[in-house]
Amino acid sequence: MSNGSSITKFLLLAFADTRELQLLHFWLFLGLYLAALLGNGLIITAIASDYCLHTPMYFFLLNLSFLDLGLISTTVPKAMANSLWDTRVISYTGCAAEVFFFFFCATAEFYLLTVMAYDRYVAICKPLHYGTLLGSRACVHMAAAAWGSGFLNAVVHTANTFSLPLCKGNAVDQFFCEIPQILKLACSDAYLREVGVVVITASFGFGCFVFIVLSYVQIFRAVLRIPSEQGQHRAYSTCFSHLAVVSLFLSTSFFAYLKPPSISSPFLDLVVTVLYSLVPPAVNPLIYSMRNQELKAALKKLKKLCSCCFQLQGVKNSCVFQ
Image 1 (tube, rainbow, N blue to C red):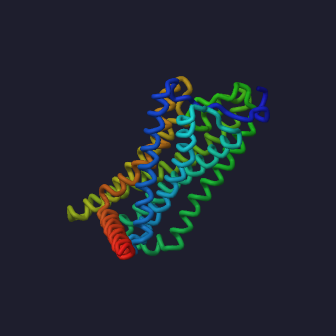
Image 2 (tube, helix red, strand yellow):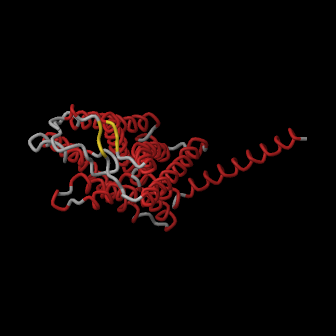
Image 3 (tube, one colour):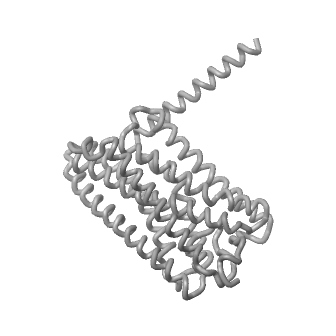
């Protein structure tokens, strides 16, 4: 195949040759997907329905949950369908759409995590200026900047990647269309253009990473000066959740995109991709709700409300039958 225009479809990675293992992969992916849908759906509903959670921190968490749903919904349904129907095929347009939406959600999520670090910094280090620096308009602007940056990055990378001539077939060694795997199919004298764009994006990402680190250095210095242990515990509980999410997402995604080709292998690439694309959307709701008392209280209220609704519905149905 001489160039990308002659390719009408790509072949994704086959998880296994036997039908039993294919179905096992289907059920594993389905479990992760349902966990992400349930967890993020509960967080979105709890934040939207509880007025006490209408604060900047939970507004950004609401956006993060939407991005997590978009991130996992971009790749997992197609991978499950391929395992279920024993196929590897994805259309050229479908592959480009996967690259665009995945890069959009992943990049926007990274910028949003940076904004959330700034939110924690202002809340702990400059509490008297919190309402001024993080008013409703400022929060909307920062969230819009994160989504807009993700969209712009996705457009640039998708257009650049799929304009490269592909000389090495159409088999993608991944369960979805991932830029590093598509670059392996490009002609050796052409893929350096996209590598340059990736390096530029990684430079901005490294700048955000440095900002997050510096923010948390200031945060921990401020927390250590808090006289009461209860105040320290409350500050740590809101920070450790964010740090856990950032550490998992950044370490795996940076390794996936910036690791040297000499240590690359199909199994390692698959494990790292699962860690940064599937695990965070599924476990983020658990991480954020495990140490957050306000979110736990909102989820309990939501549970009570749902049980009351079911009881009322049962009474209504009994009245109809009578």
